[in-house]
Image 1 (cartoon, helix red, strand yellow):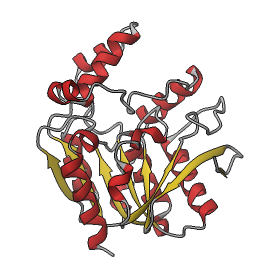
Image 2 (cartoon, helix red, strand yellow; image 1 turned 90 degrees about the vertical axis):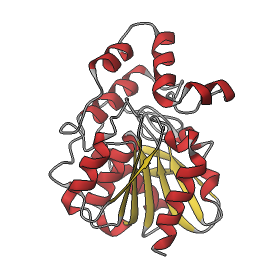
Image 3 (tube, helix red, strand yellow; image 1 turned 180 degrees about the vertical axis):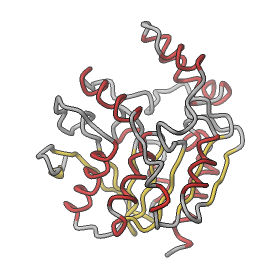
Length: 259
């Protein structure tokens, strides 16, 4: 597995597949590149996909120090540097969407087009309701997993797709890294910087997302100049997988329209 070297020396594992112009796919909180296992091929061969294991996950290093979404963004740019890729399209979902925001803000010349999926501007966005937060805070891991599955997918889809599921977190992730991811995502705040995003931007969100409320899509689109919004009817947090027949072509059309 190849690795890029981040600014602090952390090794970031990455994967390249397909052919065509580069598309960086950024996974959600506490997840490795396996978040994209079921969907990355949807973008081939029009795009080559670059996935990575966020620090703390997968085959990347797992330093015991604070993480941030800004640092995750710099890690992704280190991957582009290692590959000799000057400019790429970027598609981030959930926490990966927070990371993608900072890529476009901190490294504007590296991001050609930007897609933000099921994400939010951060602490000044709309939080999940109290019932969701309470259900995710119980000490029973099996109960938390059931809650996550319900937040991610509709019951009908789960009945037809019994798993395994690639969006429930990296099972080999150490506890300290899991905590660091949770704090990094919770402390994300790009609100004041969002108007500086110059890349053409598409915001995608499921209409039935309770994990990251749909109102955040509108907040992002209002803050980012010229951003477009697309709501996936009936989609929950993992709209990009359950509704891939709608979402993947939508994203690809947006990316290729600017080619």
